[in-house]
Length: 76
Image (cartoon, rainbow, N blue to C red; front, side, top):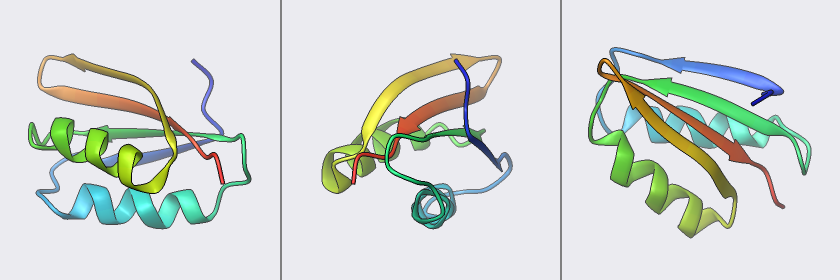
């Protein structure tokens, strides 16, 4: 999947990945996609909740070797 912006949150613990994601989403235009990469396993429920609360679309969420990658489309 092609991202318009990549946000590296590896090594950060809650709530930093969500806060950094919120700030990064503010820099995008509607329809653009953010790729957020994290190592905090708590980011899975956090990012799902973030998308639900903000109305942005969580396009993809995958985990590989302790690295969590999220693709979020800005919707508003």
